[in-house]
Image 1: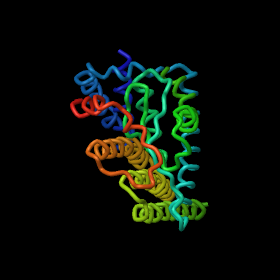
Image 2: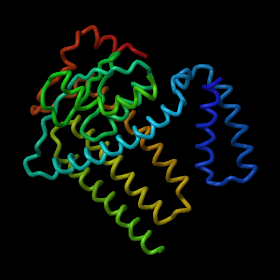
Image 3: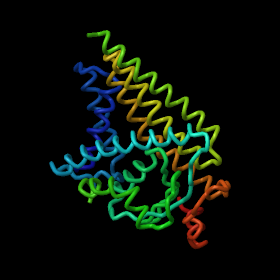
Length: 162
Length: 119
């Protein structure tokens, strides 16, 4: 049941954003089509079941967005500095990190957050191992890299998805 | 009051444009494919988002649609970067000579076979 409702809400939000009006017919048409789509296509979308909606999880979501934006700005400035330095100070490499997250959505969000941060992107996921291409590798050690790249995001994702 | 919003919006748009300029310089300067992808995410996160925030400040009526655009960019960009980078790696696009470590190469050959036949 929960997955149908969550898909319905997501579709509805996008419909309203694209229409940018709240008149009655727009609302009714959107609601009708969203209900139809979520009933027709949501038999397989078990992924929504892993999202928890407790107050703690919502607080963690907000904190995650905050932390993520901070990391984004910091990484952007650092990559700008690297690109504009005449010597091009980069130490690229592919490192392996381990995540403690067990849910599929949690891992997906973590991988996407890592990719969106300039300087790191997820090349391959193999169970709990993430292979990450990093512009500034300091060492090949899994533990150290995990601490540096993953743990700040992981703390909140753990609360959100378990 | 309106003037302030317009000026801030303009500042945001200029910052976005500067970000895109730095990204294009980076595309030219980076040594290999994988480092260029990193610059691509920079262009879309900072360049596009700052420009969109700027437009939102100048035309507040467009905010819902701009928000939808921003969400679509932020959701789709990492997926495409990941797929492009992964395909490049498994079709042996060479890494630059400056690469320090490659932990993915240490995986067993069986792993690579699994990747090729998966979905």
